[in-house]
Length: 234
Image (tube, rainbow, N blue to C red; front, side, top):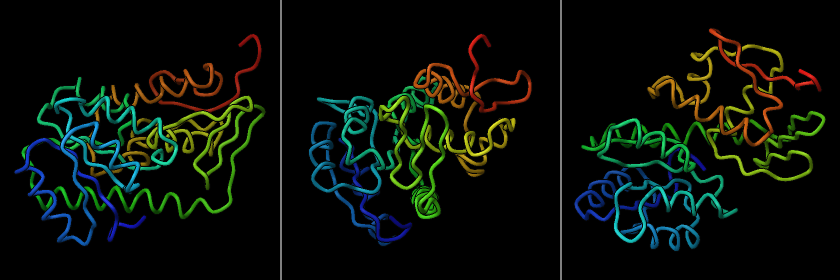
């Protein structure tokens, strides 16, 4: 995966939107595939294995939230970057999208230059993350994080961890006992060019805690979050 020449799947039931996105992403050097609803998107994604999916939320037959959840259940698509495209700016859309496993969202109306810059930035960030991992693993008593294969094992069971949750987990686990402020987490996981609300990070923290039985990630009230193994009786 690289910021240029990536495979991108556009999913939208509006042909005008598709035309705008396809033209600008092709012009930026990407190979673009198209689907018009969630069901078609899943079939196309399994066949083409895109690096990134731009997924409209409101579509017939199967909406974007359902399609995202279905894609995240497919092993070959777990590393695929999923970006929601939505005209709905409410917190509900943002939180529901992240809960479904999305990595980012872009609101309509679309500004082509901003869109291409945002997409290239996401591709570059995840490419760098994967390349820099090399052969490293982070291991604790019952938790193993494989940075190369993008895998997480808890009590010998492989856990599905979406991209943003994985990046957050690696950040915290890379420096046990360090307290990360919200600002540090925002900058490392989402990047300085993306603005997210407090609820977004809370959702990701909560979902990670649920996966690991509240054993590792802890809140330092008024400061941020830290990672350490909870001992019996704590």
